[in-house]
Every structure is written in structure tokens, then in C-alpha cells.
Length: 138
Ligand SMILES: [Zn+2]
Image (cartoon, rainbow, N blue to C red; front, side, top):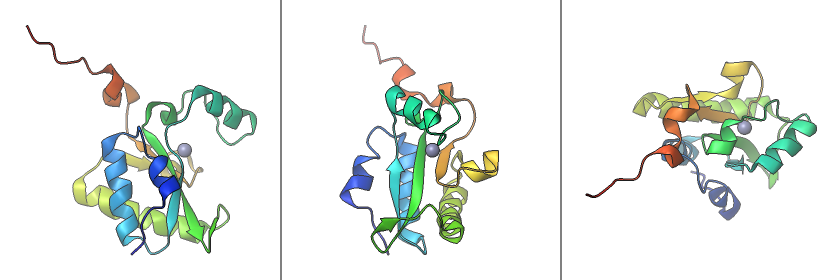
């Protein structure tokens, strides 16, 4: 059974709890080891990624803690060039998503690319925890 290292855990700070839960369950049953390369992004980082061609939007779910990138970690290195390992991650994620009926979708299924990417389904505003009104006491 694999578990996350310190950096992966740190990259989950600020993530929507449903997404964090799914990823923490998936690592336990995944056939390959994987890590978190991106969780919550700043707008500055998002701009940089678009410039580099690694992202196609300025309105990424990463900005809201609603997306995470999972990459195979093989022999001490992240491997973006291993589609079969990405599919092993997807098998584990989909088992968890199905088991708990979680509103999470895979970048590859959604857009036909972006194998590391997982995000909450639907309209992001319904998940934005910063938009929840604080409880008011009279
Ligand atoms: Zn992503």
C-alpha cells in the first residue's frame, strides 16, 4: 500500500474536502505510486502555466481548491510519459468515486487530454467554500 509524502500532503492544503478524501482513499488501493503535483493554485501560477501551454484557462478549478493533479511516482521520479500508470491511478480514483458516489471527474474523460487532472463536477460556485455565509448569531 502506498502513502503520500510530505510534499503531496502539503499540496492538498486548501483542497475541497471531498476531493482530498477521494485522493487519500485512492492511494491506498492504487497499483502504482503517485503524488500530488498541483492542488490550489495562485492566479500568478495559473498565468505562468497558460503561458507555458500547460493549461488552457485562466479560470481553472485549481484556483478554487476544486482540482488536483495526480502523477505517477516511479523510482523516485514523477512520470508524465506513462499513460498506463495514469490509467492505474484512474482505476483507483474511479473505484473510490463510485463507492462513495462522489462528484469528481477526470480531465481525460472531460476534455480528452489532461491525464493528471481531477476536479469536482458541475458549476464551481456550488462548491466554493469561501462563498458560504458564516453562521450568524442573533
Ligand atoms: Zn489540473
